[in-house]
Image: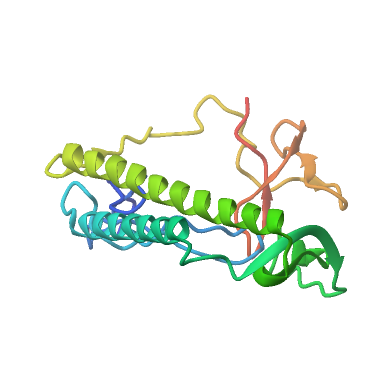
Length: 224
């Protein structure tokens, strides 16, 4: 049975256009990465009906976004009233912990073992306390604004999309017609220290791509 999708639809959560399964009518899994050699993360709209056919999850998200924005507004009001403050204050110095865990904290300061020094709010200098309060206040303001902007964008998208037709997928009969016969085929020769190699069709050198992150087979790109 040919399981190639024939239509694409709009995700109720992220608004992107994704493949629609021909059997279930739901969106394909998306929003993940295989950058670290394994499948990590998915959009919450995966395996859900496209926005063209249902907007329940979008409407639920809009309520959640607006509620979170209102909660941020309440925190700003408490900060202005002096009843809410940060627990710790960053001093501007960095300390070396000697602890590094790149497997779980890739891209963070923990990867190198360096951290921003923090002290309890009551132990900070007055100017440090004010900086921490201002930073916290504007963080909540920007978070509330971002939630409302995203809710407005997704609400308008749902209003325009719900009840419309899915996007048909048009595939060429031969997507490699007119291209080198070695396109999308394993390299005939590969440098052991890089992903560069030779096309088995024309012999040109290319930077290959991996067709599978878990069990990579380096292939040539489409070329003429």
